[in-house]
Image (cartoon, rainbow, N blue to C red; front, top):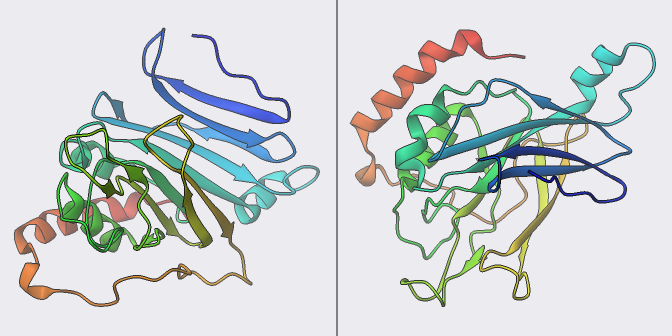
Length: 231
C-alpha cells in the first residue's frame, strides 16, 4: 500500500488491507509523535492510537513526554458502536486522551435534534463511565445526508476528551470531496487548562430513559479494567 506523503508531516498509517482502507494520522514533523501499540482492530472496530508531544527532546525525554504529550485515538466503527463496543471497551486508553472519528453512532448528546441509534446510548454511557466529555457542538452536524436514505444532516463523527480541554470545535463543509465535514478544534492540557469542554450542550440526565442493565454491564467491565489504567 502506497502511503500518502505531505511535506512537513509525519504519516502514521494503519492499513485495513494491503491495497486500501484503514486509518491514517498526520502529525507536524516539528512535534514528537509515535504510535501506541495494543489497539484492537477488526472490520467493525478500527482504532489507531498516536501520541503527540511538544518539547519532548533532549535530556529527561521520558519525563517530558509524560507531561507534555497527549494521545489521539482515531476510530472508525463501520457498523456503529453496537458492533464495536466489546472490543473498544477492552482498549486501555491513557488518562490524557482525545478519542474521535466516524463512529456511526447517533444521539442528542452530540446533535441536539438527532434520534438515538447505532449504539449512541451505549457510546455515551461508555464516555460517562470512563470520564470522557463530549466536545461536539450539539447544534452543528458533521455529515450531510442528502444522498443517503435518511435525508437531512447527522453527526456520526464524535469527539471526546479526557484530561484536556477541547476548544473552538467546528465542522466545515468539505466542498464536494466527502459527505462528511472537516472537523477542527484546539486542544489544551496542563496546569493552566481546564478539563471541561468549551461547548454548548445538554446539562442534565433523563433518568426515565436510563438503561440500568446496560449500565451494570458497562460498570462491571470498567471495574475489572481500572487496575490496568495507565497514569
